Image 1 (cartoon, rainbow, N blue to C red):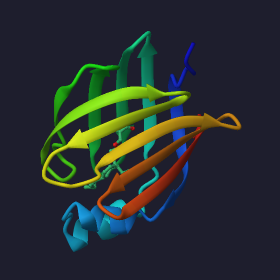
Image 2: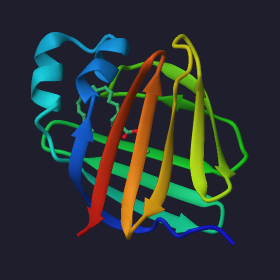
Image 3: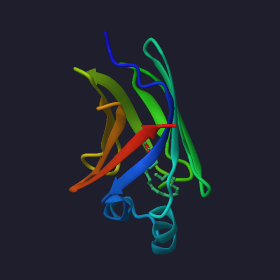
Image 4: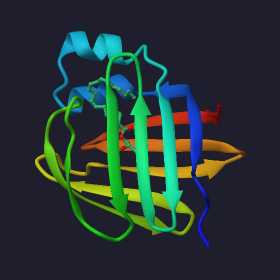
Length: 134
Ligand code: 1AG
């Protein structure tokens, strides 16, 4: 049985987000504003079906998927690319591989000490975010 990531989570830390955005070719002005945001994650997990919302004053982002089923992801409002994405459980970690123009792109969510962790990768950059239950 896998961990339940469901809930509303508030960001408490965000390391290396700017270099990560830079790898995604996000423009300077957007990066300066985006790195100050403290987004909320709202996760609904029903078996292998997920809805993950990332909510902020600047942009909202929605991704819906079933574990193990590849889908076309449109990162609309973020870097505006299309990826072929697949999410899987890697033991207790929920891992997404985002195949597309950018190499080594993906993310991993896991629970640690009651907090929700997220690592976002693109090429040689790793951004580390931590969220606490609202
Ligand atoms: C996310 O994906 C999506 C949000 O967490 C962060 C990821 C990428 C940001 C990329 C480009 C930024 C472009 C514009 C910034 C504007 C708003 C940013 C709002 C969010 C700030 C963190 C993983 C998710 C699973 O699908 O949790």
